[in-house]
Length: 68
Image (tube, rainbow, N blue to C red; front, side, top):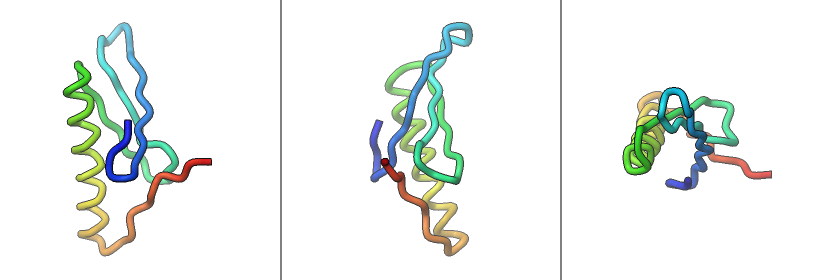
């Protein structure tokens, strides 16, 4: 998944019946989850937006996903 320059890695948990993911390539940890693809995508967008707002509040430069 990609959003605003961030890349999310997603896995599916068979037991919990839920998708969960994490933004990759950062030292900061950004996670998200959802029970459907639409909910997962919205949670990913919300998590990235929350991270960017948090960085802005703290006057810190947000990290960007680094791909090797």
